[in-house]
Image 1 (cartoon, rainbow, N blue to C red):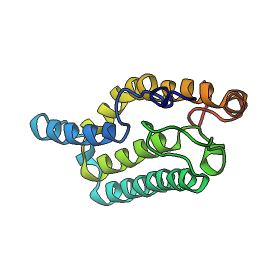
Image 2: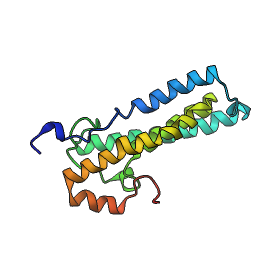
Image 3: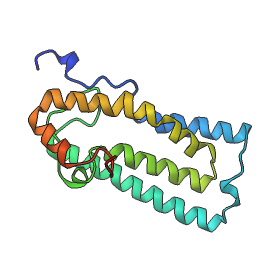
Image 4: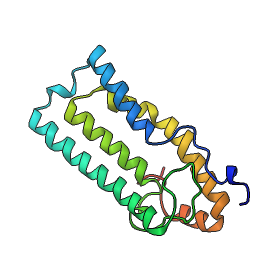
Length: 162
């Protein structure tokens, strides 16, 4: 591609802002309109389950980030993809950073008894899916053609197929 402006997926929002905004809005809503659901779980259970989710999610995100760096492609979706990531966690899912980020967010919500955060996460899924993931997929298909179509036919978008 010669036109640099079209050599990016054109996502509607910088992806890391979504979990950050969800966390901030969730904390504010928890202060203003507490639902008091997660607070009823024993603290030790919340800490254990939330920490496990946090660690698993971080490992997924960091692992995917390392693969991007190792193969020499850009992590930031506003920059061009240079190489298609198809190894490691990318053999299980085409979107490990988004899945891992969601798991991290759930872990924080569980530990902090932030009831609004999982609800906001569910509400944000259409934005993530339509505004980021589908745009990235169209871009990768334009950029990598048959190589991406073959990869897409073998590896689910998430960890499951509908």
